[in-house]
Length: 116
Image (cartoon, rainbow, N blue to C red):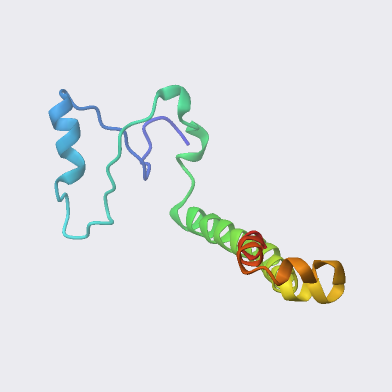
């Protein structure tokens, strides 16, 4: 966008540390989520090209990231939970008979179950 055109983001500089510590705690509007105050990043840390992304586009991107993370979470944890259910000590001892003497010792069995 052209220099000086309106944007949905702003940077504010405060004159003292006290003002900077107080600013995030002050109610700026009756809708608290309308203005969000944080410490300003360094100018080199700001990606200046994305400050003019429309609000609806930011919301769509946010939802896409959320659903992508949810999909990865489900695709990872469901198989891991299934495999963990199969790897109990009793199931392993039925498949591997040489583990029967270990299962009979309560301390060792509970210790190994903690790892499985």
